[in-house]
Image (cartoon, rainbow, N blue to C red):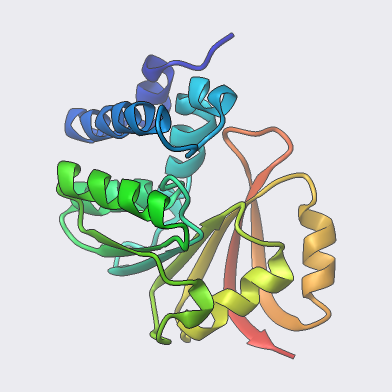
Length: 207
């Protein structure tokens, strides 16, 4: 059965204004995807489960006092734009979206502008961005954990939390990452993918 907008509205329980932002994001993605390959046609057809719900599920795990977010490898905005929509709804917070592909960055900037989101998009590579401490680091399908931790480390402070969406290879990635990194991890079953999970990472340090 297709996962619909109504299903997302029920499961997320967000405001009408926030639902309208998700609908506008979906419409812009459909429009832009005709010219630029942002997501596959199959994934686009499953927007509400595979993209909207998958990205939104991070939001309930955001610390209440978090203000500075960075999303690595943002692509078409999953989950970075969802974080920005959440910041807009709660009235505070700012998201930096990092996407090295210029055309995708142009799409992100268009969504940010049209939806008036508290976010900026940069086409720099993650490793070229000036180090700065963020409250929250997010990523989905950006890199295997050992490499993702390397990208995230320059933005990590004592109280930083990493929220990373991962698939069925998560145990293998955690094992490999633990050879180089020390961290605390909590695994939360994915709402959108029976084989996936959300990783909550704290106290990330090199061994």
